[in-house]
Image (tube, rainbow, N blue to C red; front, side, top):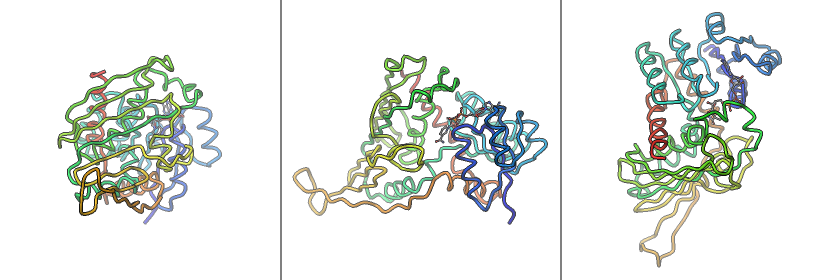
Amino acid sequence: MNPVRLAVIGAGAIGRKHIEVIQQSSESILVALADPSEQAKELADALGVEWYADINDMLDEVKPDGVINATPNTLHVPCAMACVARAIPVLVEKPVAESPERARELVDAARRNNVPVLVGHHRRHNALTAAAKALIDGGKLGKIVAVSAHWMLQKPDDYFDVSWRREPGAGPLLVNLVHDIDLMRYLLGEIAEVQAMASSETRGFANEDSAVVNLRFACGTLGSAVLSDCSVSPWSWEMNSAENPIYAHTPENCYLISGSQGALAIPQMRWWRYGEKTGWHEPLISETLPVDAIDPFILQLNHFIAVIRGEATPIIDAADALRSLEVIDEIRQAI
Ligand SMILES: NC(=O)c1ccc[n+]([C@@H]2O[C@H](COP(=O)([O-])OP(=O)(O)OC[C@H]3O[C@@H](n4cnc5c(N)ncnc54)[C@H](O)[C@@H]3O)[C@@H](O)[C@H]2O)c1
């Protein structure tokens, strides 16, 4: 089978990661970059691929088999709509849009035109996620009672030199917590109720730099999430999962899930339970679940290629990603 011809829109931080994995794959080739920046033009020249400042010109002239849209949040919907209008499957980075209203436009257009839209919640492709889901769905933890999620780290100051990252809405609720919310929905089901508080005291930006959130899942599980992009801490998916070498690795856990029969610490994948006798006087038994360390961006790309070839439907489409975005919106309203 011929490799699929892919174009990347937005060759910034995460766009370059997508380009790297496309180039490692024998099932795909990079045919064009669309990004008006000088750095993107230089990158296209260095890679020997077509460069376009305008995405519509690129789509009409190159006619790629699929597109990866790694533009700033507010461009996700217009760029994805341009692909959908031309019946080109698209992988849109998360969050699917900057607001639920905008995301609904894309959901409708994708349905109307019957074009697959995959959303870049790449943690769903991680083997750690698959192992946790198998344990939970297999009933090994019993009824899930509570989950505690931690996303606390320090983004370097120059991260904010890029203007859109300082603009209202582009704080860690939308850019980062949306990943954790999506992962918790995937593992534990829909979120029915939220409470929240936020602070922008440390960075002093228009956006929040820290927040705490309480969650009630439809299945009855209670949860809490703590996030901060300005605190020194070893606890976050980025630093704990080792899935992307650009982040320093700290071998800690960022999700603690406890049920009536056992508990799981993710991503170290330590599974805790009692033997015959239960209760706090008894010793807990634990084991570490073996998980293959495969780059989830490679697995995500393989999945996108299967979607383009009509062999799979998106593991997370625009409608599903909209629900994760709606939870972020509900959190914002609660704040
Ligand atoms: N899945 C993940 O783990 C992950 C990680 C980081 C970022 N993201 C998401 O990816 C998106 C991009 O984030 P980033 O940190 O790479 O941003 P970035 O600012 O580093 O890159 C964005 C790129 O888009 C380009 N661009 C701007 N306007 C454009 C236009 N009209 N047409 C084409 N290109 C245009 C910019 O020149 C820039 O190169 C964000 O939505 C972010 O939430 C996802």
